[in-house]
Image 1 (cartoon, one colour):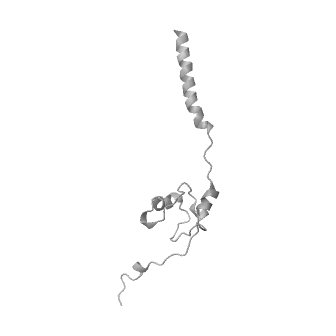
Image 2 (cartoon, helix red, strand yellow):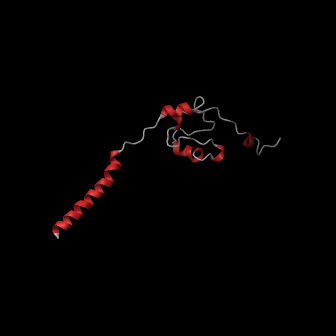
Length: 104
């Protein structure tokens, strides 16, 4: 009886180890920056709106992951350091709000 329990225990340990080992054996995927650069038709687009220097890519992805608020959807949402490639462009003046409340 004791040898059967030892065999079952050994078999269980072997099965558990075979499930755990592959998870640690594989290397994480390497991002191919060259492939992304070749997809671009030119320089990375400039950012046409105000950007808080302290914000991260998750804040950018709030709109750019899905294209909400007319934001162009990104094809690389896993990259969270947006301003390492994209720079602040010229900001558009807010024409609608500028004239409100004024009477001449």
